[in-house]
Length: 412
Image 1 (cartoon, helix red, strand yellow):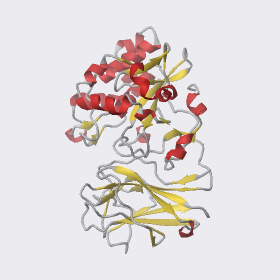
Image 2: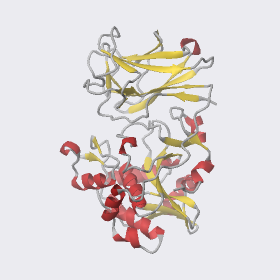
Image 3: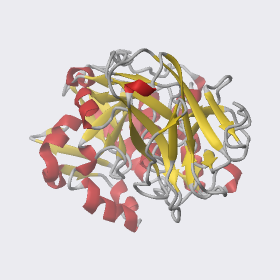
Image 4: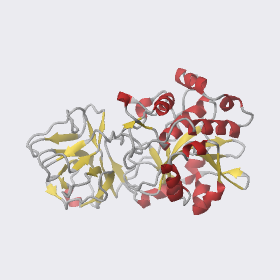
């Protein structure tokens, strides 16, 4: 077994992180127990497109081999092997810098909102340090997204239950009033689900972080308003992508009395072939069914809607199993969607690895929702991955569970 050590949740705003130079350095302090085995250092960082400088890393004053950029202009997870002889029982200092004089080489991800972070920044090559007025604009206080996994120990068990909205919440009531009538009054649960997917899929144009820079919050009514208007915070074009279709769907389902949760999919660590969908519990099928409100799609086989494990087992044969609703016509007006379907969706790439976001109270507890999921490599610790993913390079996450965990019916 092994255990991850961290002091942040991976809630990264990609447009407000830390820039590294030869003068401006970042330090992360992690408390680690005694160890005699090699460990792994994980850091979430971005290399500039025209940067040829490596990233320098030091552990407790000893510099390690420098890190070269894998793919430039994207926040990715970088892994560094840790010799146990360099680690100490207690506080361990991990320092990061580069050789550039300007802020045009490397960025280190940071999570804002910490009162007393165990992260520090220096503007004088490490002579003095501060843990406030951080990030490149010296405007926030936070924790750098740097984690360590040791071979010894055991990760904590994942949260046992999805946290649901309170059905009588005024936020839920407000959203319920905005739903299409069929979502509330259709004769079957499947018809109500399809009413929601068709409505949401046709409500705004999929706009990714490659097109826009202003991330929409995980708030269904705000997503609908920003998406339809094509303008959000500060009047900017908002990011409203697959994440936001699924988030709005999960909240809408709860407003309609349908149990639904967020599911995060990936072809692998640092890969762009990911997706964000929902799972809906159907009593008559006794399983969680994959629902894709972005594409207005559900997959069927043998007269039954398919779960995510069943879709994964189907591999590249899923093309003939997809039942699209009318919303797909609206989505296919965007040529990027059609290309993504051919390259990622139909071959089943995005279904290889699956996790569940364990909170569904997205309206009443917005402070627990990520501010940029899908705009950087997956990093939020609220994701619960299937246990075999720990062996597929997902060691930067703390929660893993067996298949039975994901198939349990909802407890409200």
